[in-house]
Length: 282
Image (cartoon, rainbow, N blue to C red; front, side, top):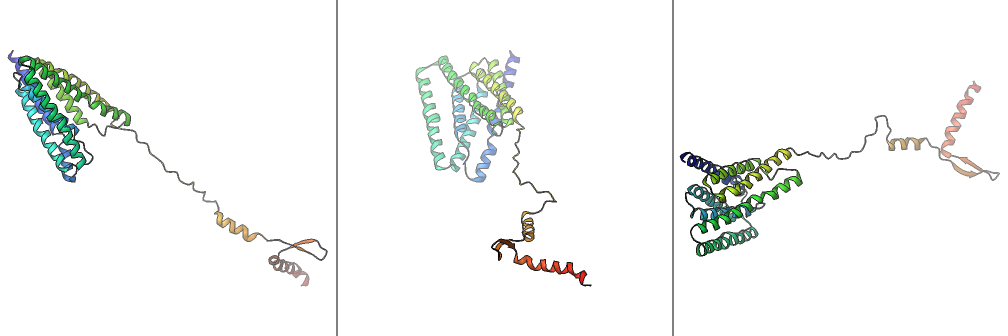
């Protein structure tokens, strides 16, 4: 029995440590938001959902025996997500602020408030624990199904740009720790959702291995074929040919017949004739 409790505590403690690393994963994102002083391009939905999940598990842990490890990690997650949302709202545009307030009102105030009222007034004892456990389990299953949209995008684009391997790895490791914690504690509401979390993490890591080196298509711009070195330029060739062409203009002779004579060629022809007759004069 003591060994059983030791293993349960060990898995719960490891689950706390790994989940803390997962909670700290968005820190670079919010550092970038603070540097640029704008939240443009980022969405608040994941942080609102994470805050709602932490609130649900805290409420569940308050009515469960020996749930100190659930209380510690979800308290840490609550304050971290609250801080992320506060920073986001500080730098968000008016439109993003309005959307974030609507989400907080829907999930964290109205939704959580309704769950609290119904479970506190309509259930008692162990039945309350079961009702809260089922609510937490169903919501956790929905959270673990959410990455399937990213998986679809990775397959379609053949790029893992939006699915960091480190985050998928730590989420998978966290699911393993919390599964064994719930199994050893005989808490099905903790163990069952993490089976799906483990499978989801394995799928994400396999896709990362497959698409981590996407094939790049090199687009070659068409170029004009260069003429051979011995080719002659069209302009030069044209001017050379034109310079050698003798323009012939039709004229009528005394007999009424057409004769062709080029005034420009007449003088060279006379010089050629004189040159041919030159030897006979010597």
